[in-house]
Structure formats: structure tokens, C-alpha cells
Image 1 (cartoon, rainbow, N blue to C red):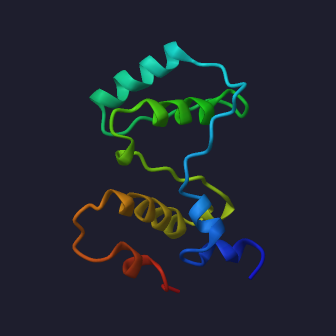
Image 2: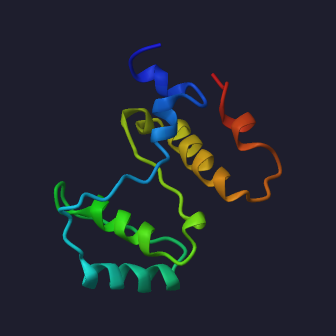
Length: 117
């Protein structure tokens, strides 16, 4: 299958890449002050938003944060794309990402979202 629908295939290569933390470029500049602010905010809050215009280093900062956390197995990543414009698809992506944390669910997140019309 080609095109955007290939992302809907559970377990497809493009689908797995959606949940993988990107690699940090060797030429990346360490944003130590911003990283410290992000770490402090994450310690005090359940949700932290990083907002800036395109090209301002949001992804780089978040990759550095993911690399620096004490429990990297508790980090989940979702790369957003056009399919996430749909609220159901967006929530399904978030639920699929947190599946890796092995949380206790009342029902399987995949059965709740995949296969719905």
C-alpha cells in the first residue's frame, strides 16, 4: 500500500517510525538553559507544551530532553503528520504511543481505535 493510508497499517515500517525518537544530529547545539527549564517544568507538571515557530529547535530540544531523562523507558514519542488532523486518528496515535509504557487499561487501546469506521 502506498500513500498516506500506509500509516494506518498497524506494525508497518512507517507506523513504527512515527513512534521513534529521532536521532540527534552531531551538529546540534546543546540548549542547556532551555533543557534545564524543560526538566524543571516536567518535574512539576503532568503536561508541558513546547511552542515556537518552525525552525526554532523544538524537535532538537525534545530529543535532547528524551536523551537526558533518568528513565528513558518512560519517554514516548509521536511524530505528527496529516493523518493526525483527524481527532480520532490523533487520539489513537497518542494511545498507541503510551502502550509502550505497559499501563493498565480496561480494554486494549488498539481494539478501541483500530478498525473503527
